[in-house]
Structures are given as structure tokens and as C-alpha cells.
Length: 531
Image (tube, rainbow, N blue to C red; front, top):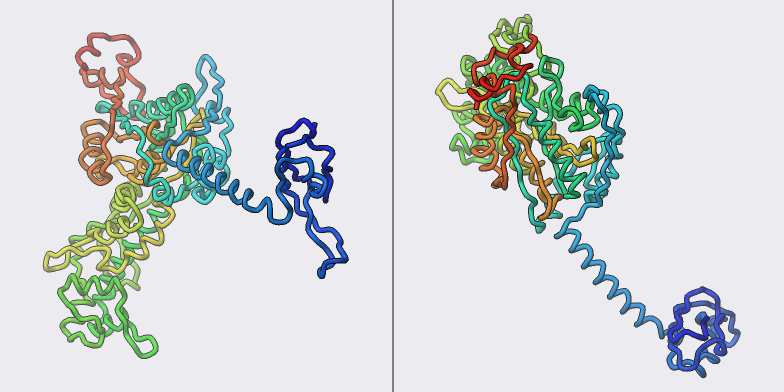
């Protein structure tokens, strides 16, 4: 076979194995072998030879690369060529995303089983496998077990030159208290485009609160054969973002009440010494304290140079307890925490006040997390949160309380969206869950931004606007889009027969009570009135 070849490439690691008589006259021989053999005539006692017997081969071959010294330039040239090819492939992968789509087949049954039975019957892909299919680097995925993972914000920087995918928002007509299927539609549309049209498709949904999950409304993973799985992990705890928000919110609340207590029980001098203590005989302002001085109009940076009046201005926030708007939160439906008295212990010196608990997702921190574009933007928004007014009517912020850094540390992982999957294996970002009636009711800006880059120019990102179109979709446009700079390419409006009948004058739909027969039977007249 060798004698028939016009070009012979030898790389077998055996010294002088190929003989000249094996070669076709005039053949080109590329000898890639480098072997050391004994040679007493050399000072080193050895010399380098190739895999081809050079002396006999050069008499037959038209061209042969000598060893050593012959194959080096050719090797370099081939390496350069391969480097260029690799760079071209990498650039194409970055600019023109094509996922290695591997969808999960569904096993359909009639009658349709319950949501939990359907979810339990499907085995999700390993989350790292899903990440590889999406083209995410190993360092960009932080697994929480094998079925969910955080995705780092570094993806945005790596893919900054990639064209965004098509942006679709799903909203609904004014819903009944039972919900009308926006999440189900979002997930179902994503599955259809991904698994059946083989398009890069991401769904972006809000993280459900544990309160409604255990209430009459239930979970928010979708329904039927359009669900996010594993359902129980989606609805409960997930990667701990809501718990982190609870901790951050309540830390700020504790700091607020503690500050009022200390200002009421200490002198100006003692308070200043606590805030700017001497370390090794020297006081130094922190960055957050310098920002407070700027807000007060004090340009000094040496703690010892402040006058007594300036020290008082710096140390005392002089919060008016009657104006406090910041409440504690818990992710549970507990009606007996709606109004409480705090400070009843003797150690609080009878400094009691009436306050309340809210549900965690109603915290302003949840809205901040949902609107932040990056870590610095989140810190700025956290710093500017107003928690109360002072006695002169000026706002008191989280930054005034010195809490910005502590809040950011507690939320450092929560700013990253959580990657999960649908029943058919398409990717889903689950991130933040602000209510639409008190905040803007949409999943995070960051989740949408990353999804649009990962999906690429020919891909689709389907995001959800909570509640009805009159509130959730309106706030999606007026708040979220203005914050992100993104504009949707299409809107999907979910309209259910049940909601239309209710708007047409049907019996009230009340959580916990059976549906009136009006909603269970055909009634075209009522439906027409709703339309």
C-alpha cells in the first residue's frame, strides 16, 4: 500500500522503520517521527532520526523532510492553519448560536393524569448536559444538585457581540382568582418551538412564592403536559433566592429598629464613637459613610476634623417612627402577623411600636433584584431604598443606615438566574417573583438578557407578564422595558372561556368554592357578553 502512495506521512514512533525500497519513485515523504538512537560518534552518545530510513529513502523519493529540522516549519504551518480554523468555528458558534437540541419525548395519556403524576413520570436531563446543549461553558453553570443550576452573569460579557433572539411576552386578559394559564401557555409555546420546530427557545418565568403554593392558588409550574420540572423543586425553595431576600429584608428591618433604639439611649459622642471607632488609635470613614457625608453637604474626610454639630448630623438619622414604611417579611401565608407589636421586651425599654409582616415577594428587595441589570446596578438600587422619613421630612435610605454592602453580600448569588427545564427538555430561566399589584410583576431583566444572548439571532425568548394585561403587561412595558432597554417583537394574549364568562356577568369566581355550573356548561350568550 505504501508503494502506491504519492504522499506518505509517517508518524509511528519507530526509528528508521520505513525503507526506501517501500516507496513509490518520486513520492513526497513527510517524516513526523523524532527518535533517539545510540551513536558513539556523537558527544552526547546518541542522535535523532525519523521514522523513515533517510539514506535509502532520499534516493527514491521526490521530496523528503529530514529529521531533525525538516518537519518543524511544516508542523508550525499546520498548527497555524488549525488555529485559524478553530477560531473561525469559535466565532461562528459565538455569533450564530445553534443548540445541540436533544428534546425529551412525552408519553401522552387519555384521560390526562394529574399535574404531579405527569411531572413525576418524566425524568429530566442532567442540568450540566442541558448547559452543554445550550453552549454554556462549564464555569458558567453552578449546579444546585443535578436538576437545577445558577448561570453566572459572565455569559453576558462573553456573548456581548451576539445578536439577540426574538423577544415574546405572554400576558393575559383580566383573570379570575384561579388564574387563566399564562405560565402553561409560556411553557407550552417554548416546548413547541424547541422540541417540534427545533428552534433555540428559552422560557423566562417568575419564581413562585411558597405562600400561594400552599394556598388555594397552588404552584406556578404550568400544567398538564406544559410544565417546568422537577415541579416540587420549582415551587419550593428552588436555589434559596426567596430565603436570601427574606434574610436581607429582615436584616434591614432589624438595623432600622436598632438604630432608633441606640439614638434614643446614647449621647452624640457615644453614638459617633460607635459608628467611627478608633482602630490602633486612628479613625477612618468607610466608603458608605463618606457617601452619607456628601448627602449632608459635609466635604471633610478626616473623622477628627468634624465639628460637634457635624458629628451630630452624621451620627443621628433622627428617624420618625410614625413614618417607617419598611416591614419584616416571611414567605408563609400567616394572617396573624398582619399587625403586630414589637419591642415589648424589658430590654427594649418600652420602645414599642405597631408594625406588620408582609409576604417576602412583596419586599422592595424583590423588585430591585428583578430590575437590576448587573451587580453594581443592584447595589445602587438597594442603596436608594427609602425606609422612613426623619423628623424634618427628609427620606432615610438603606445607604444612610450603612446597609448597602450587607444587603449586596446576602444577595450576591440571588442575582444569578436559575436554569431548569420543561417536560420536553427545553431550557427555562426561573428568576425573581415580584407581584404586579404592588411592584411590576415580571421575571428578571437579567434572565431575559442572558436568554436572548444564548438563544441567538434565530432563537426565541418567551417571558411572562404577571396578573392581567391591564396591570402586568402595562408595567412590563412601562417599567421593565424602560429599565432593560429591550422591546418585545410579539405579544401572546391568553384568553380563557372562564374569564370571558365572568366578565360577561357570570357568577363570581371565589377561591375555595366550587365553580358555578355557568362555567362548566356551554353558554355562548354569556361568552359573547364577555367578548
